[in-house]
Length: 161
Picture 1 (cartoon, rainbow, N blue to C red):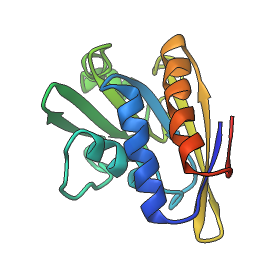
Picture 2: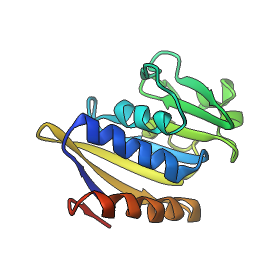
Picture 3: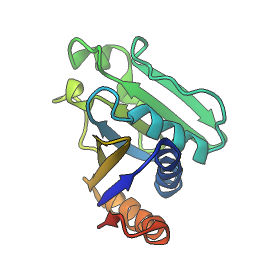
């Protein structure tokens, strides 16, 4: 699935739609260069579960946990991760459970340790906006994409499956 996100407002709205489609569980890898909008998309996902506060990338702490009602969301930023094994030492395996929603920025830094994601979201800068390419990695990821197709169809024709 490819989605054109012309501005920040649309990117946050897409993140909210993604959050609804995820239903509070799964593992999502957020890929893209610095400034591509990974944290902005995460802000939208968090809003889907009622979070209204600021969202910062946990660059130095590696993970920021959120408990929003029944949803346990872990926002990882692995940019400064020195070695994937550090994830084991910090207890990340417990944070990646099936009853959790994990959004992982810079997942390539955890290669070889992280399990296959349910969904990969590649973000790229396109003018003042962004382009998101989503690829499922599991049956759950495919179900999420199916639910997102409804959002995209109601939005406009700048989305392709």
